[in-house]
Image (cartoon, rainbow, N blue to C red; front, side, top):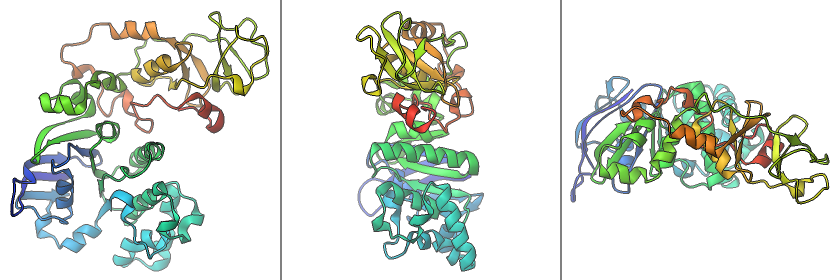
Length: 398
């Protein structure tokens, strides 16, 4: 657990960078600090490992006052991940990961074994271990940074905008991988970002800071979206927060996917798709895309497929169902099981009707929080899986 108790950071001139921050980051959860530039989120994070010393107040990690601990020893017991990985350019990938274990006295052979295990765990090929950071892509460098932070098995991780310098596709995958690691390791993570979508996706709780380093609101993502504390939080979270909140609402039980006529590549579309649209699947019933049976009498080829549309996983949040339906050229959202096989489709009209049903006036009271049905966050609640071609190439299109 990390606890800030009325923590303030002042510099020689200007207003406080952090002003009276009181906040608890619960053990084994991800707490995200988010806010505009100048709100003190990075300063707050760096005060935890005493890279920045607070001017007033108290910070405890695991119940121990950090001010009473040796700074170097404190830092070796806390994982730290920053933009671009923060790797030592003159050391190989393997030696970068071995750094903290060696400082703690771990035998070299044991530290090397640990490094190789972690590189594999964060999704890197073992052949990269002998490369230098400059020989890696940005996403690979970030993975090495995460592996290095985990090398000494610290209970606490500090992550300062670790994914902000990579492209959106790599960033998405890094976020998914972090959630998967967290489900396995249950670290106490303090994560800084300026991106509210990233905060909602990753955080068990989200702390919104306003300029001047003052805490505006701290809540789980569903509550933050449903009940922003004031105009500043509402503006920062965004005007589409109602749609984002659907990522925490499980699809109602009355929304049962309906049977869908399908065909396969090279097979006839005769008798399929009363409205002209036919779903094409592979031999394992994994969706490949849509085709128009009324455009041609010839069996569909891959180049004929409309690859638009996402797929939703059965039992997932309502947002994924709605996105699948709205993005589908047929306006029928494809729903698959955990193996990526077709279950059926859902229609926009049925989903909108379910949204029109009465809800409790408490707003977020009836919305599952991070431990509810929508928060098996290996698949982020605000993502409707992947586009249809990925189902063909990689298995389940999620």
